[in-house]
Length: 153
Image 1: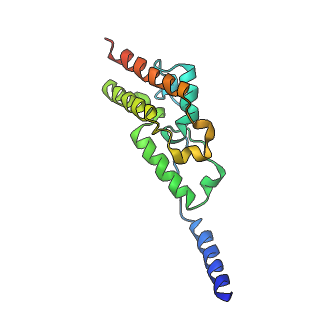
Image 2: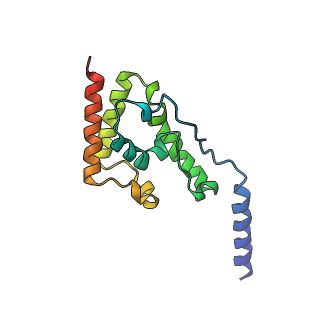
Image 3: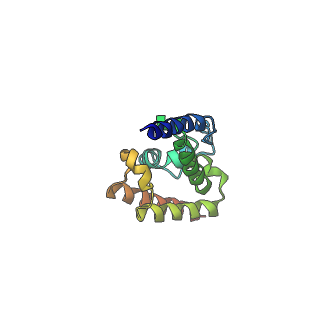
């Protein structure tokens, strides 16, 4: 019984100590003219869906839950968010060339259509981010329409 108390005390001390290790979560920045929010390629309905299902990991507008302040969860979230933004950052959409935007739209289409995005681990906590068949179809259509606009002379 004494060994269990010592182990629990040690775990509590470790948990408290790791709270002082920075989590690496990115800081939110105000939206500017580089954001897809200001793009002619996106409709309000699609933008609403992107905000609900994509922006937490793919923009500079992350909504951080209370547990994002606690290690080791903060480290895990930082890894996911930083990785997501390295692939696609809607807040920096206009920094991409036309060719890059077309490639990103194709990636979005493939990931959403295959049900790979949003991540299953994200959907456990963010049920409102789950895409139904109609929303998937709308996002796929948007990627196709936006690609056509980008390919037009």
